[in-house]
Length: 192
Image (cartoon, rainbow, N blue to C red; front, side):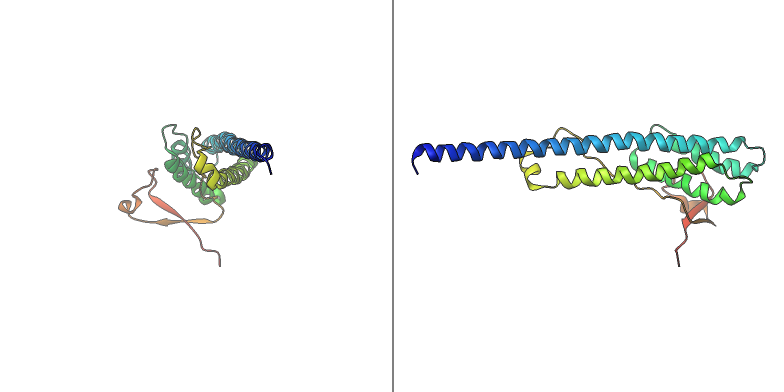
């Protein structure tokens, strides 16, 4: 091999490496953007769920204690100053409250059921997008060349779906870390 051939091979390898790195940077950016878009959709669904839950208070046949539980949990989730961890806790509280009061409601509002199912589906889509983005960010090439340095690392949104739970009475001092002023703790039942 002469010098021209070696130089041609080096140029070809260099072009392929630059193409591969730029392709990977584009993938990381698209995955992060997808996670941000799914978060916006999930946030809208969660706000809609909380608003519909707060509208339950207007039902004539709902008792005042149930209305207070639902309204307290719904208002707590609508607070705009919550960090993500607090938001996860308040959304879980709302899910548990809705499950606890569901048998007490005279007529199940189908709109609320649809909004709960929609929020659950969007949460799964968001967490899937986040796991894809995080998997790309963990690659050695991405970390070595710092291809994701300008974007914020997405986080999954973990909350209780709220399918099976019961109310259990507890003393008020055991409610540390709770964001709502409920006097009961909602606990998931173990499926047997």
